Image (cartoon, rainbow, N blue to C red; front, side, top):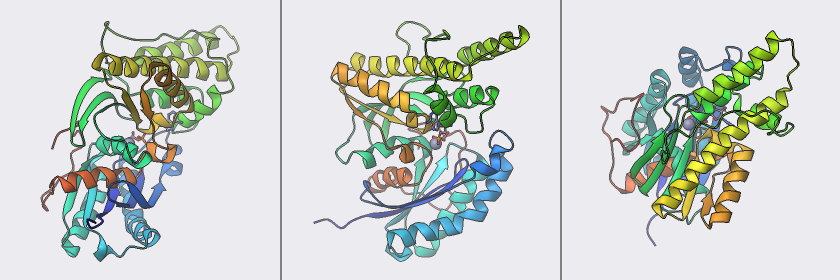
Length: 340
Ligand code: KG4
Ligand code: ZN
């Protein structure tokens, strides 16, 4: 049998400091996440400078805890994988500098990983038999893409958002409803108590056949609805607003992702990114795939939001393809999907 490959993975692109040990790209031996959410909540969003400082405070113990949890000595890892973009530059640099120092000191290869490719790879952890090619709907706080995953390191972007990402729209609407940051999980919970048909919010599908998204019009429609009600002194029902808004987001995401599979003749669809933790999106995408005979995969919610296990999985596939960086590796805040 071939030797097992152990990847120590580090992620610090936004507001989670995370480290994990992953075996052969599929088996998570440890997955430590230190969230800064409580710190940023008082500001209503991530403050980049504070995020960098918090990463510095957490990075050492998070890595030590990941190794300890996995019962792996740092000398035993085969490579150190790290997110080098996209994300907040100061935040990325903390994880990157730490990973470089570790790789240098241990004399191990340094593997650069794209954050969104990491999100996609969470599906390989979820379903041990899941392999490219497949279509993947990527819905995070900063990205909304429909991607054709040709191979572990080859991606065709079929569509992307022209304005707000799905998670960004969730967080902004949550904010006007007075819900805490990040708003997505709160919209998810509140929507479950409301009537999705009580208020008709627009579904923006753009030109016929397009796989692009636009969520800023929907966000404005929610704001206008709330402002108008306030000016008229009318009472609004927040649960119905959340439910109507979420239904509009989910309808567009499901329709476009499933249509992409049908047009390409691809029978496998996956989801990735924080918004794919959304309970209604998971349920409706699964149901739509079932009806169309499409195999569906979505990571467990803890693997949908930012974590390092997904970076360990993507890092493994980069490592076995020989994508190794040297000590000049820098952080790329706007790194494009598939770019190396
Ligand atoms: O992938 P992620 O953890 O970080 C980025 O790479 O951006 O995604 C964070 C986004 C936030 O906008 C958050 O509100 C959203 O994912 N989110 C959710 C849910 N859980 C997290 N949105 C809707 N429903 C959820 N359950
Ligand atoms: Zn992310």
